[in-house]
Image (tube, rainbow, N blue to C red; front, side):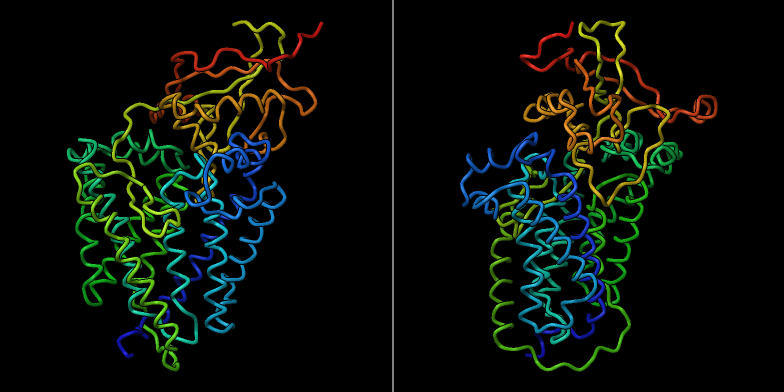
Length: 473
């Protein structure tokens, strides 16, 4: 069937596949390096406890069948290895069926992680990676030209990502409609980057232009993804430019990068595609059958998108095949941060030597400039931002974090930038305090060298010690 393939997108597929493999690699590396403290056997939200309460049908995962920290680590590092092989182009030198199985491996492994990841894996970019990764299984290799229907479905995801995000903003916080949200967002976003301070201090008229451009890119430009070339390429390229602007402005994990990867699939690169035989019948049947299923399942995200009660970042099936997306439907006007401190004093007081724990990404020391971590995702740091918004967000895991710090747990301390206590001498008490943070002005930065100014608000957690630990004489 000549209509089944699009040879002109040969280079687009190649670039898309290599870029997607790179995102997979970052995702698996993040899991491998952080899981023990977050959800390992002695983690803050242990996987064994979760799978004992949730049935396989609700959260399909290899770890429903067996869990140990060693097994999880093996799966995560195996995901890294397969992703690296795909990045190197292994799928291009094996038969078509083997390439499809090869792409299925990271999808199945990452699905297994996400479905037991609980709060740590509750972000929209997890489902987005899985939805895109599943379509990559059907995209083929050098034995066939890219299937038209799969390229269409990739654009359909990109449309839902951008258009859904635009709608949630227009329906949500009024500052998006007034074009004033960026007066606050660069300062109050979950994890600022090294340039966020400068973005915040851009002239307010430019902030208005930023918001207006965002609305245009998310509510108008996506419509042109389904037009003939070169218009579709121009639309996708504009989305890529917008996403790169967001990459510069903050640390949003791989959300921007996976969106860029999607947009790459819509670009028509000038190329001379090789001559390949017609796609085998079994491949055409599989692609068309799965495409029909995905279009049928798209009813739910479409219904959510057009609903006045639109929700962000929800999956409508346990395999994360179709999902709804969106971000920052509301924008905080004030930044709060939870500062965690410990003391070696047996009887803590206001005069005790309270020492602050330093996190890798979230604001802490006002003089420490934010660093760039994305697309790598610091999961604990992101959840600490939610904890500052409301203790209810931290209820399931914050107590366990405090307990691990009181034990000087090695895996937990690896998630931090620095612990103020030596490994063999843990603190006697931990407390947490809530501070209001704001960016310093240009003058304050020159005079103090601090990029933040912080003000104590209230006690977040009173001094706490391990239960049953006797005081030392």
